[in-house]
Length: 422
View 1 (tube, rainbow, N blue to C red):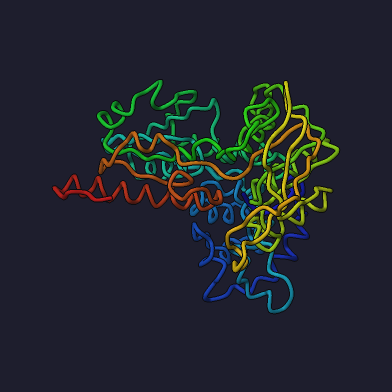
View 2 (view 1 turned 60 degrees about the vertical axis):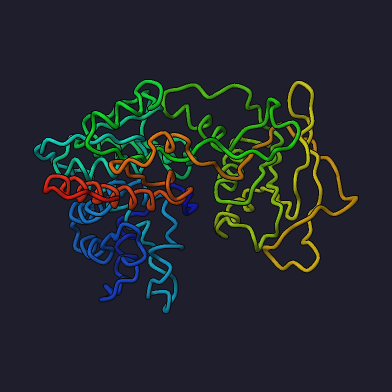
């Protein structure tokens, strides 16, 4: 999901200027190279130093319409900060904090709609990929209609990121700015139900699918249907629902929670339920710590909150009558002759049970079946999690922008008599 930076914390202007003064303004700018959307980091930092905060925000938003959100949730240590040359003299510059400051101070930055050029484009999904693509297309003069099944926008950024990492006000700031250009966003409109796939293919010149992933994967063990068993996206969406004007789902009385999985989403779930007051939170992962896909910073943040970890452990059954009462588990080991990352097998005789109130399955999500309904039409383009299987917010933004460029090239080719290729 992103870097574990508490969005409720911010730096003073003095702290920001001190940090900005460390920038070397590198001619090769590895921070720009490693940013999926190519934000001109040295340029916006230089504007901060000169007190031109609005100009700094402008530089950020020129590359990333979700500039405020990404300031809070981008994995800086894995992206722009990874090859920062100041690391040779200490720590990498905190680009995320500087970006956060710039977009907060430069709130007067607004976008300007452009004239319509007569082509209609349907965008499915009002998440980072869909809205960044819609924004770029509207900026090129296309008439864009966005269809979103939920009653609010933001996609995974809205329902899948805990509020302590992404303040609802930050999300609303970016959504409001996008809404100045993308004027037709139809919420609570499910494609395939409220509007048909055939209608979109017939009535629009191109379709951008930024609909995200499908439902969470299951473990295919007994008891998964019991009350108290949730997918990661169900739990995160439910806990975030209160910030979107909806009531959280009932049945989430969480005191003893086991989270199955080892990715960043599993860490998010563990942290948010621990912060919500759960007395015991255990992350269960079938491989070792070294093999766990979650970023080390995410793991350390969870451990610092008191989240427990059981490595080389796998669930075998969820037990209970009216709801979850216990989880049956077994220890795991590498099969003979296998090396790290290889095939596993249960340790014979190691089975045991853990008392639990809630089990959260965070082992990934499947492909969105909606994509298959659009077939192989040349006018259909895919961006974000729907295509990459689930990545960062900034990667989804980058893919939405690239899809917009591809759609523009496709429609220009059609206008000039070309065939138009994906």
